[in-house]
Image (cartoon, rainbow, N blue to C red; front, top):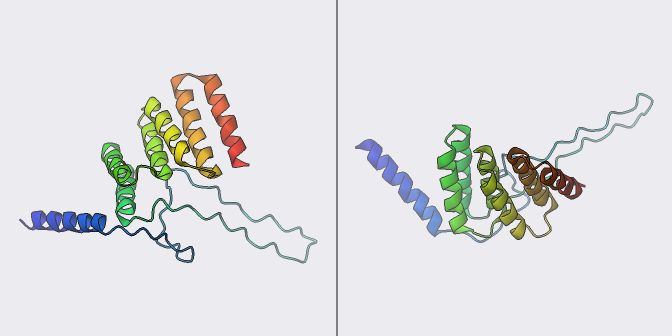
Length: 178
């Protein structure tokens, strides 16, 4: 009986979060609560080694800020749930969570990208390509996101045996990474 009450309370809290979605974007100064895409992250650049004869120390290079998946707490909760499910091997549950998030924000390119990554990992290559293309249709001028999507497409094409299509996708990814 206690488990039912806990599950009911959790469901009520989750639904109340859906009902009180804030449209305000997170502030740039508070990055502790900003979600990031876990599947593909930007490379962290190490500082250039200082020359032995150089008396000046090279300042460390800070990694590029990671983009927020959403300003909606409901979407953030669903994405976090999906990430936990992926971590525990429950990819179908992760897909269901991402699809629910997409029903809330159907034009969110990062959600489409996460779902494309998930489908790629599941071996559903046609869906991975389709979702990556959908992500690009909403990505605007986000070069990093476009590069990630082209990498998903390239990897899916490799798995499908389309070497020339994969090569073209990887070239486009490299162009967007510059």
